[in-house]
Length: 469
Image 1: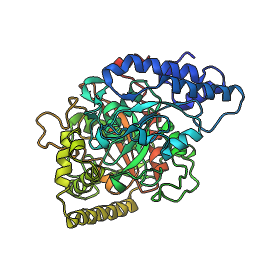
Image 2: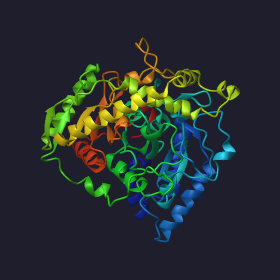
Image 3: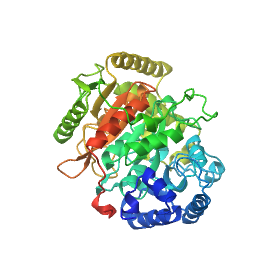
Image 4: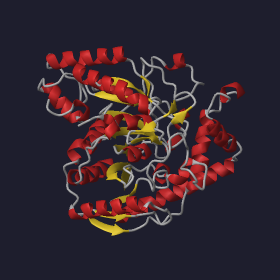
């Protein structure tokens, strides 16, 4: 292969395996070596088990030699955020309070689907404790740094997965998103991240964050995102809240054009301050969508900031995650997490139901908005990555992370699909992101719009630290 293995997409890897140009073992060894070189600066991984990974790669290699391949991802290495149960590895969720032995021998629906399709498990990636914030650091694992500047945060809570993909340590990764946790690190690290419609990807055990929490793919291309969605959206009876399965070919849907689509473009949702470089990049991106035949109208959805309602529901979820923990265990945990848990534990049932009412009203507003517009386009974030090991930027007016993620968490409240795409680098050399939001269960259209944009504005760059040509 003339192209660097570390830069190959999952589709390209499958083709190389089938032509015998590469083997799953060769690819896995290359990525494990890349992890060994790059992860000391990034801290994206909390578990690497070379023996298990290579044993899985050798099994895939034999299937190719027998012309008896297994599914859509046979032999493709995948990074797994350490909130997904894996039968051979403990799942600690970034916390010293979890008993590793009690997590073994079980598999999350996403992991079970990957197994059916022959994936190679590459390792587990870092998360803040219980995935509670928009940056990735924990008392157990420390901070995860940004491949474009290791002095900056990778974002979170799927920061380990984003850093691994961005730095050429993995072609694909699993993430979760209860307030932006796929899209935030995707934007900060310059990769693609998709938060599916709630229920589109089965998730078990149920998240303590309830129906805010989505599981989804993190990749370097929209095509690979669609490929992962084809796998991850398979039925699993353990998720009682999963949407009914229906025929859906995410890959085939990428080929449609955008002619005739009505797209609303909101620079700031009517109330967000956005960095000038990001606003300029989003304006340029919208011009590309117009050139592709879409009718783009500048329009805000017209809702007020739902920050208070989101805070009640999300921090209530954090308290739910800690409900069984005693004082000794809590003393081992992230002090900032304990602060929000303490506040959430004082909320009343009426506080909670008021937040539910606001959530329902927002969902209704967005459903009506999408009667007029097929898609909504916004920045993914109003800022680029800031100093690592901090919850908010220096001199930020608030101490809590959702205040700098105003474009992401509203669409956890509504359960809509939302895709983050790389937009290039700002003047400081840090990635920026574009968000495409669609109607509930219209993930295929969101991915198609992202793919068509990507064909016009391809982004295959790697940070200099990655050493990828």
